[in-house]
Image 1 (cartoon, rainbow, N blue to C red):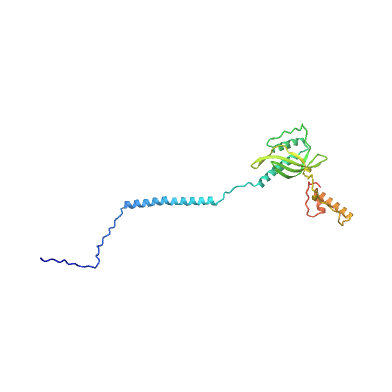
Image 2 (image 1 turned 180 degrees about the vertical axis):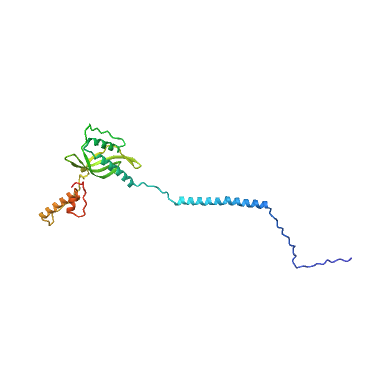
Length: 250
């Protein structure tokens, strides 16, 4: 028997694969519309959310960076309002007319300063006519204002008196009232009772001024200060550019 030999062929060239045809699938119009609506809804949701988060972050930063503004009450404003109120009260208190009928009107005006009018018994007697010369604030402490007041009293023979005048007061929100009767205190009480010997000023008579010149100088000084505290017109005669302070005592 003869044996059939198989032929073995050697092929070193690569085998080419057949190209597959790509099929393009068409998307239906209905699906396209659904994709479009989904994208539009996503934009409408995401954009406002991003804007909201951005605004919230900026507001938080402003709250952290910006310090809290605290409105402070200016004590100067309060003091000036209180000072004006107390000066009006002092003017009304020391303005007493000679006419008894007008005194009643002045008493009614004075009563408006009190929150509760204090009971004062005058037993039908009229007050001495009084005129305020000047007032100067000395101290405000513990709802009591102390003024240095100079006033004139009397009709024919007027006397000028200077006292410390204390006024108790109360108030709220820029509105004030006199809370009780005022009180008087002598100005001399302000002077020191005991003074250290080291603080005493000793004036030595060791100048070259003659007695005649000293007498002339003393007369001029007395004349100057008398006019300085009483009359600007007389002061202009013996000085230049000096303003008088009427009402002071020399």
